[in-house]
Length: 376
Image 1 (cartoon, one colour):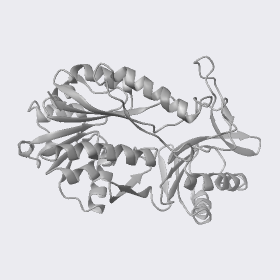
Image 2: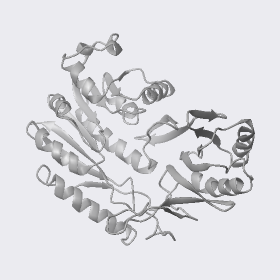
Image 3: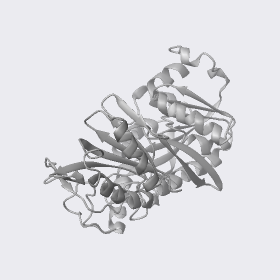
Image 4: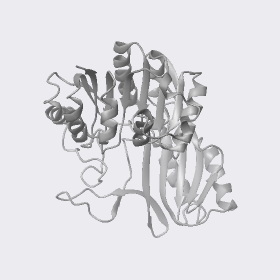
């Protein structure tokens, strides 16, 4: 990928390296961190070099009568500068975003004050099947005049548009897009809401899920436990390889989306529970009872496998203690440093038998990784 803003835009920091060099650097970093626990070569899943990001947010920079998209400045000596730079291209976004974002900007600038007045950011959520949801964020209350103009945008750009301001959400049609991914020979449908978490790189996301499926096939029995399940990204495709599934998530919106996705995919062996990882641990260890679980018989599960996909902070001590009791662990990590830290404890009961790197974020230092552990 080449971009005229490399070196000034803070979004892509590894612009000076070829993509092959970036990937090698990330592989060496993760391999070094995992070397006390795994000495084989990592399985490396690369990304398209451009047009890979299905979710993006841009600031809106006002200069006189004109608006432009803007991004934060490139850090200098590790210190991020104040202000932003205007951008005139962004080749990392997938084509359904790219073909609409510049037309949208032209419409905003041609709209007098209706669309541009106190507009401070625009968010895009798109799918590989060309659906796109555009969220426009304002520092003012939105009225019927704005809604009428925004409704025209939906027709002109063939997309969905919604508006947000403080304590206000204006829906013109839907607040979601519907993604269809081909995963391990099956079509999986995901409703993805504007306010929920979604994996940003659909190509690498499929590779990541299929890697997890490969581990599930190796197990081939028992029940499945998942923490941080989100909208069911892993849950739905992995459910086919287990008898029963219990998946937990703290976000009400994500649970709502997960239940909707279960129905869309005609899957009936998953039970979703709104619990944090800490609450999940307390419930399964019998430390605390939850009203939210009154219709779920936890004793009916015989978990052979657990999947965790925690935030950058990694797992808490109690959750590590809980999953240490389960025979097979699939650990997906967005921070290899905390993964290595957690493996110091998990390696006392389990051994790493597979490890992988997923490059969700090309041209940045960020890297995702995964390990499959089995009881010693």
